[in-house]
Length: 395
Image (cartoon, rainbow, N blue to C red):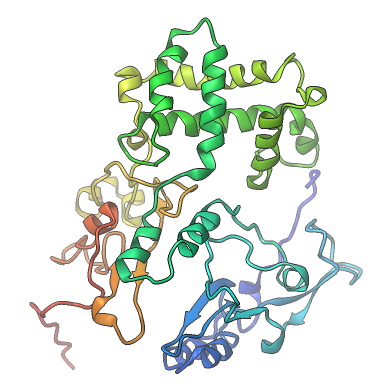
């Protein structure tokens, strides 16, 4: 920062960073309380852990070592040289935040901040995701009293982007105010009938999604960009989208960024990059589908060194439903590492979807066997079927 080198502290560099004894104990935990106690003994990078047992108890905690943070609550980088800032060992198991049997009877997490107050002070903010995906999951959970496996899989594969609804209305306003550009005018029916879902064939979804990003970047750069650049940043932080959205919805006259005269001018300027992108697309608007840019993009590590191996190791690069703004998180090369729905004691009804599948051997007949179910979001059984081959390890 400011041209000076920065050394980052990371729990992975400390002694005991990897401890598997807690994980082994976790495998045999009989109930939520025992599982929580075991989880606090695991040496791993911190991760959300949500638990449930056959007696109906549920819990959330952070698995892994949690440093005891000193003077670091302002979320700014500090020198540890004088001892005023830094880590002082690790929190004991009893100090690590937990949520057990909340009154609502529900727990959910989508990489968002789960706790506040003293619990947040203990955990710190290492870069939480915004609450867009989590709020959609919450709304789907509170909408029902009882669930079966297919209901929960439907939440995991939900591609409805409710957070983009205000942006669809803003884009329609901007299109209506535009009197010059034919490409912009032609966008209207696609944006009007956009559907609100991150479906591969949706032109309207891609238009609204890209308009949002264009507007956020434009306003951020004009209002905050110079200050951010001086502080060493040059990109739009994830947490900044909501206040910018409110500016565009409420349109306070005193905050119109220069050189624009009105907020209509700002929205019109945000349309320009989208229109240029459409004009540069072969096939024009009709081909401007979300699936043209949102594809699987999964590549085996070997193909980075030997690209020709891709035909053997990489799954088909096909259009993909989902986005990073919906529960069905999926963007090129990144997405849900698995979708698992299982109730204790009812494993035969459990569902499991995993990109590419569980086999890591490209020569195996099972290699890639799970990819189609993961791409389509179709139910795939958790338990294996009848064995077809047996592997014998010779002494």
